[in-house]
Amino acid sequence: MTFQPKDLDDLKKAKRLLENPGLAAKITNFLGTPIEKGFAMLPENWSVKIGEVTRTALSKAIHAAVLTIKDSPGEAASTVWHKLAVATSGGIGGFFGLPALALELPISTTIMLRSIADIARSEAETINTIDSKMACIEVFALGGPSMNDDASESGYFAVRAALAQSVTKAAEYIAEKGLAEESAPALVRLIIQIAERFSIQVSQKAAAQAVPAIGAAGGAIVNTLFIDHFQDMARGHFIVRRLERKYGKEIVEETYRSV
Image (cartoon, rainbow, N blue to C red; front, side, top):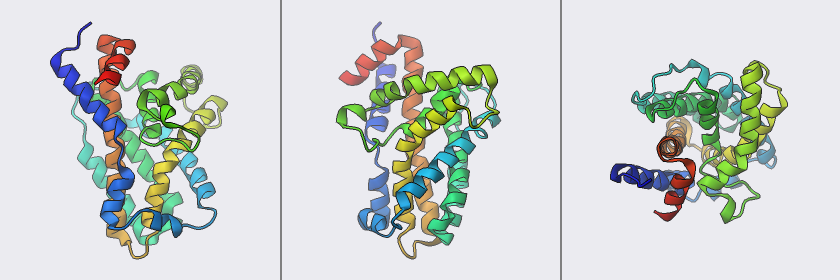
C-alpha cells in the first residue's frame, strides 16, 4: 500500500520528533552552562532517590491521569493548558529545590500523562481502550536510552519492541482486574521498565533544578521544557500509531526507517 503524500509528510514529522530528543540540549541552552555542572551538585545517592521517586510518580500518574479524560477521538489537544499547569508545579519545585522533587514530580507526571492522552485523542486514538492507555504510558520510555542500551536498542521501534511483552502482560491484567491494584506484578514490571528510561529525563530536570539560585521562575521554565519534550514524543508516537492503523505496522516501520 503506497503512502499518500500527506501521510508521508506526517511520518517524516514523527521521525524528526522521535529520533531527535533534545531535553538536555534545551536545558543547557536555558542555563547557559553545561548540564553536567548541575549533575555535580546533586547528592551522592541522587540516582537511587530519583529512581524511587520516578517509579512512585509513574504509578500514581497511571492510576489517575488517563482515567479523567473523555473519549472524543480527533479533538484538538490542549497542550498550552497542560504546559501552564506543569510550569506552576515546577515553580514550586524550583523555589524549594531538590527536596521538593518527591512531591512535585508525581504532580507533573500526572499532568503530563493527561496531556499525552489528550494528544493521543487528537490523533484519533480511542482513549478509553486499554491499548491506547498502554500507548500513553509508553511515551515516558521514549526520548532517552537506558544505561544498558547501545545505539541499536535506543531507537523508537527498538524501545517499543523492548516494552512489548511487559505492555501485553500489563494490558491483560488490567483487562481482567482493572487498575485498582497498584502492586500487581504485571503493572510493577512495566512501571520499573519504563521508569528506567523516564528517570534519565528526570535526572536532567533534577540537575537543572540543583543549580544554585535557579528559583521559582527557573523551575517553571525547566518544567515547561520537560513537558514540551514529552508532548513532542507523544505527538510523534501517536502519528505513527495512526498511520499503523491505516497502512499496517510493517509498512509503517519499513517506511519510517527509509525516510
